[in-house]
Image (tube, rainbow, N blue to C red; front, top):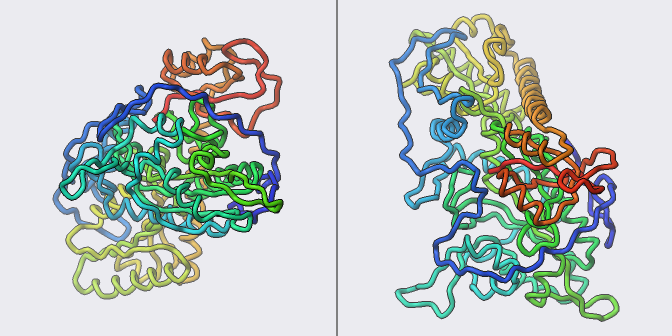
Length: 557
């Protein structure tokens, strides 16, 4: 796992690895049209992305209880999910329902995150929050209701978010003097506060983050991936120089890359967004792009260099060492519950979830197998001792001692939930001082008999399995990604690659209109200019002119 470096001296424009930073391009030109929306909006999503209609979740189908034995299997105790290859969209929704991750809320486009789904989000929070604090970022909280006039202060920002705004126009039974926006993001209200908190260069850098919910009026929704309301973290920083802000934006996209690769086992492609695809009001946006199991791209996290755009709109200034008033340079960056959807679609299989061990709320589940009443106490005691040893070794473990279900039912239940390792303990295992382990990422070949129940041996074995599973999931996902990225030299080759569902990578120096043409004709968008650029020279696939960089185009969620 990559280590986080401490911030460099003021003005240093380097990432943690010391790589040079490419200068940001300026913000996209302002487009004058504007639409005011009151709790209703047109979708901002790619029209080609699959949409999901809210539907009642199917109840789990339970079959007759099956008899269990030491290390034995059982027939499927829950209805199987639709195969991924048959209907990826249906498969996804069924996994979300059967793994008890989320349900549909009563308001169209909303979701209820169930306890198991929320525990995954807590894992995300735990890792990222610790990393932010290592970098000196402090948590805060800002109001959910934002005066509409704040949103309108930054022209490009209001235009970009207008179709997604939900407005509150009444309060206490009376019309409000000014509509209030239900938080879509917090750059505006945070700048309002920054302008009061920041007076001198001694107040910089100012580094805050908040964990909160946001609302964006989406009409094409999918649990975790795109919903009316979602959870996220949003970091906001203010700096004395443009170089410091650029270094901060790059550092945070590196943090997200590390998390995606090292924790979520998602081999993302980090890079810079085009002007068209950048955040509204940013000088430039950095992104991590992940390939899902259906080959669509998912924007899994972003970091924005805001320049002085919001500072100028809100008068956020500081007195420098020469006693001159200067606008601060800012960044914002965020990851949301969308990352859970990304994990599902990256690693899930026809048995349900496959969670990377470093992210899994439960890394190992221990299933006692009792046939006779006289076996209950010794088997339960053996399971409890294994659990205690695992917890002492830092392994997140659960003993499933629910007597209402058979071992076979439990095997399928925990497979659906993606728990990486299963441990089976029966009466014969107790007599022999051994147990059985099974890996979620493998079939029958992942089952191992005769594992010692001595605490040191047992925990070493389980930890070895967890490490192997983590590495294996990442390797599988990386191989799948690399197999489905095609290098193209012309627009015709791009169209052919996209038609096959693949990512197209090629030289790009096209105009904004050229980029829009690609989207209109292929439904693919420019996902990013990857940081990892192949050696040149490059030729633009659209114009045939020299290109300084290659870009990736793909259909996306």
